[in-house]
Length: 296
Image 1 (cartoon, rainbow, N blue to C red):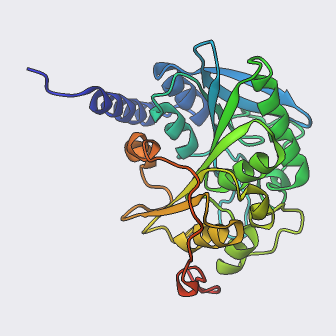
Image 2: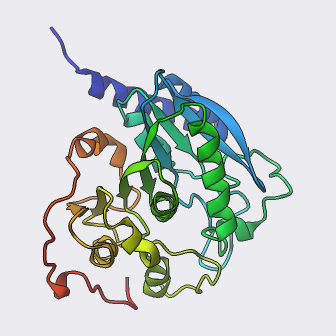
């Protein structure tokens, strides 16, 4: 008698690995490297300008389509006023999404200084995971790393997926590159200035903000998933981006009960099956996209 199907077994394995790694006090890099390897992803470091970026991938040539995952902001702050000493995510949702993806060809890119080990490289100072985490230099580094991998597979097209702040970077990369055919975000911070105002935190003058280039993505098939219980990046953010980009190719979906750091990977295979494409322009009621600024 068959008690469990393959997805259930996969998530039981992931849960057990996280439980056991917590019991032995394993550091996040070792824990996540072990987990990624168990799920068939191989790691490498990519020297991309100022930063060396951690990457994991599962590739089965020939590669015509590569789905690329970009991690969130990680453990950027200890408190509202104290940056962390190491931005490696305690809950690497972006990596978990990549591991849950059943596709043949998957690439995961960490953000600068994440999974860099201790002590951190001299290039890694807190500014790069706090106020400069969306700076032009960071975007250039991420694009450089992506190009290094893609050039190994001439003619391959890219599907970008970004979690949280990685959603901002994914959208910016999609606007710059000519090989991206679709964009997905999960709890994506697609309007950095709006989010900073919402949470009453300092402005980020060096940040490149995805919503400002949204019209460049008007013809790209895309879908932005928001959590109905997410008060970090609420659904209003995706709706604001949709309004800025237009509704012909931009879909938004609010997933009930999901918070910012919820187990998105558990439902990711189902969300991946949702078709994205371009249809007729749709009118969005203004009251559904405004969102109040100034309170969580």
